[in-house]
Image (tube, rainbow, N blue to C red; front, side, top):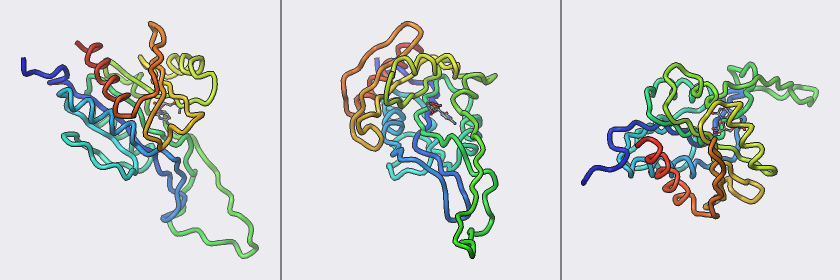
Length: 217
Ligand code: C5P
């Protein structure tokens, strides 16, 4: 009595987009708001966990009782996640940029005199979820997200295997999940698929936190 289910546990959560610089004033990014990831960090903390939230640039307030590490790029996010280990479980809710400009300019790029567009070579970013899933200090439970617009379950199952994680929270983003207040998700594990109803993101977070607590118990 008096002890919460995740007391004494350390949880790592990623959230938000990453910003990949092109020059000192320009970057590549995406529309992730960080709402779902921040809500998950808050829900895990509410169950008593010590939570490290590694967040890209967002306007969400820091969840109460959570240690927030702010980063900009995918490479900074990976380094911050590795520095946060060991953790009992990790939830990778960030929308990490798949590519970054190969050689960011150190000065603001100038418009070429002939009005041509400058070339923009991209290189792949590290996959944080896949890296942590195969890490020597892998958390016992590793959870990834999969935003899909079609064949949601099939793609999520393939992602489980490819990334080496334990669960995938697959969300159907054919509607308005990115930036919206609600989410329709399917929890995909080796044991099968659970379809959850459309819920406010805080409710999705609370249910996921309960499942994490059960799995670690
Ligand atoms: O590769 P894809 O974007 O489809 O997979 C999504 C999942 O992988 C999410 O959990 C996301 O946080 C994670 N991811 C990551 N690092 C990347 C790309 C995706 O951690 N570079």
